[in-house]
Length: 115
Image (cartoon, rainbow, N blue to C red):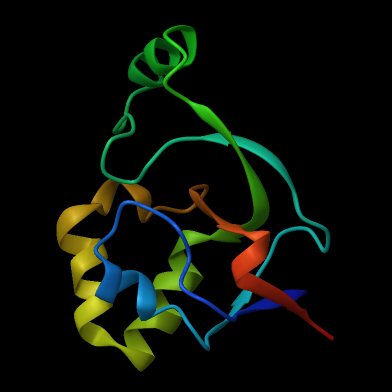
C-alpha cells in the first residue's frame, strides 16, 4: 500500500499540539496521487447520519479539500504508538471520525509521498 509522510503541521480544527503530533508519521493512503475531495471539519462537520451530511451538502457547508486520503483507523493506530495523548484526543473529541470507511484528507502541502 502506498503511503505519505507528514512533513509539517496539517491544517484543521484539532488543537495545534494534536495536529503537531502527526508530523513525522508515515500513513497509508488509498490513492497514490492527491485529489480533490468534498469534506468538512472534524469538529464542525456533520456527525453520523446521512441526513445530516445531506443537509451540510445542500447548505454548502461541505468544502473541497485537496490532498491525500488516509483511512482513519490505521492513522489513529499509528498515532497511538507515537503519541497516545493525541490519539486519545481524537477518540474523546471526534469519535465519529474513527470508523472503517471514514477518512482524513491530509493537505498536499504538509505531506510527501514515500517511495
